[in-house]
Image (cartoon, rainbow, N blue to C red):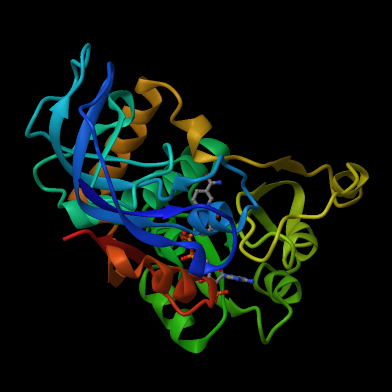
Length: 325
Ligand code: NDP
């Protein structure tokens, strides 16, 4: 048996139930993982509310780190006792123990702790592909990154600095502004007080930025397009304020032949080769200390609903994890 969070319907945090579930032996190609720490991500809220549909009843959570307790038939790349982690995979991480496909797991280097892995796998691999593969950035380029003091945001501030990229971050408070600067943002804008588009123009001498990384969606999308310089790239990678409304391709033309992409981590880590390369790159910057994961909220597994309330209310900074024991 395992304690786990299950949901039978979509809705507010109250739909998250802390229950006992039976975990049988792993099937062919599966492993049983005993979690030591579990990642909390904004995508969990999209699944909980139903913005991203899934069959119900179901589990929640896409990221965890722990130890392999059993392996099913045909599993070769991990063995019982291995320290492992995963991200952006079938919901069900909010649990003490779970079965899952072995192919999604990476073995953790000795120096990467369980909590760091659970906090960084999803958010850190996201920053990896967004900075290294979605855009082709050069040192000296300037980008705009919304929610710069969040989980993805604080990792992005640090990683952009490693690449010599100037990151202008948006945040909703003075405390969050200070955190983003501390983690390497070049400038910050409080987008609840200032018009971020005008401020970006001022900060770039009217030129605009090469890339906008927009995970806020509905509230920021139009303003974000106006921050780009000609041939700039709009990366819409989340919907914290709600989904982006439909827009006409002519919006890209009139603002200077802009490029647009709507990426997601699953596609950038779909093959073993891409998953391992992305994780290796993340483990590299974590091991060197160039990127540190700010785990600013820890909750017990049974308090997952409280974690959701805090994340949705914009009360968190950096990364949040659940502890299952
Ligand atoms: P964060 O820790 O960044 O939390 C979300 C932040 O968004 C808040 O702290 C808040 O920062 C800001 N925000 C602005 N408007 C709202 C709103 N109306 N409601 C709630 N929050 C708001 O979360 P994560 O680091 O987990 O994820 C960041 C974003 O990246 C999410 O949109 C997520 O879906 C996306 N993502 C996308 C991936 C992909 O591959 N496509 C992978 C991973 C994450 P502030 O108070 O400063 O405004």
